[in-house]
Image 1 (cartoon, rainbow, N blue to C red):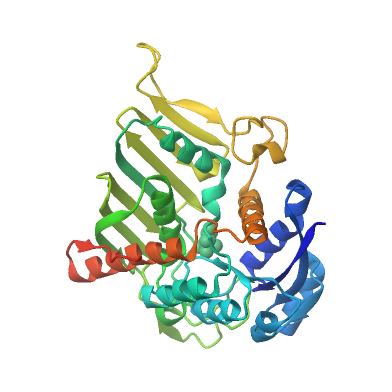
Image 2 (tube, rainbow, N blue to C red):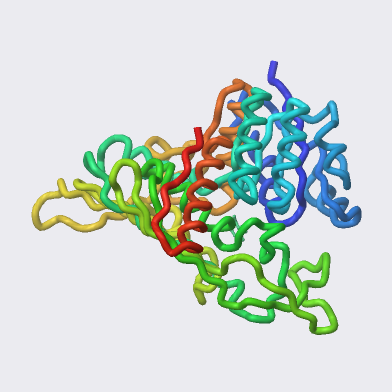
Length: 390
Ligand code: SOE
C-alpha cells in the first residue's frame, strides 16, 4: 500500500509558492515514489495572506502559528521556508516532535545555530535536508557524475563561480529583513553565496581555507513598510542602518588542492539571477550558466587535434541525463521550478526509506563554516582556516 506523507509548510512568500508547486507536482511526475504527498497545512503570520495562499495553492488548512503546525499529529514533514532568524527555532521544535525537516537555505544565521540544528537532527534520527535546489538542476547533477567518473581528469585545478543579482542597486530599495544581520545573519553571503559554496562542495569537495572581502555599498536605506509585497518604503522618509554585506568576493583552497574563486553580489547591474561556474580539471573543463540551464559546456583534452573546443551538451536526454526520464521528449526544456520538484522527490524517497538525503544539515553546517571563515577573513584582512564540523 502506498504510504501517505502529510506536509506542513511554514512560509507563504516566494519560497512558499515554489515549494507549494513542487509538493503538488511531485507525485504526478515521479509516480513510482513510495509515498503520496498530502498538502495538509500552510502557515504564515498574516491570516488573510495565508488563507489566500492556501486556496491558491491547494493546501487543506491555513495556520497562523507555526507551533501548531510543528506539534500537529497529522503532520509528518515540516517544510521551513521562512526568514533566516526562524530556521533554528522551528527546526529544533520540529525535530523534537519527530518530524522530518526540509529547511530553506542558509540553514541558519550563523555556525552556532547550524551546529545546534545538526545535533538536534542527529538526536532525533529524523530525515533532514537543506533546500539547495540548484544541486538538482539536471546539468549540475550531470556535472557531478562526469567529475566522479573522471571525465575532467584525476585532478581538479579550479572552481570559479559567480552568483549575481541586481535588486539592491536602487538606494531607495527599503531595508527589509534581508538587510538586517539579526534577522538574516548576512546579506548576499548567506542568501546567494551559500548556493555557490554548496555547489563547490558538491562538485569539487571540502574547502580548507579562505581569504575574503565583503562590502556594503549603501549603508542606510529607507525603513520598509511592514507587509508590503514588493517591499515599499514607509512614509516619513526615515532611514535605517544596513547591517549586512551587499557583495562578497573570496578565494580559497579545497582539501584536494583545487583553487576556489567565488563572488556573490546584489549589485551586478543587469544580472537578475546569474549563476555561473567553470571547473577546470587536468583532462577537461565544464562551464554552466543558470540563465541557459539546460546546457552544460564540456571541453575534453581527449578530443582529436583540430577538433578541440567547448561542446554543448543539451541536458534533456531521457536515457542519459539525471531526472530527465520523468519529463518531456529530448529538447523540451526545464526551468527553475523543476529543481524543487527533483529536490522534493529525493526527499520523499529518503523519508519513506528513513535514509539520509543530501544536502543534509551536516552539509548546511559545513557551508556555514565556510561562510563564517570568509567573514572572519574579511574583518581581519587575513587568510582563515575553515573550522571543522564533524
Ligand atoms: C533572493 O535573493 C533569492 O530568492 C534567494 O533567496 C534564493 O535562494 C535564490 O535562489 C534566488 O534569489
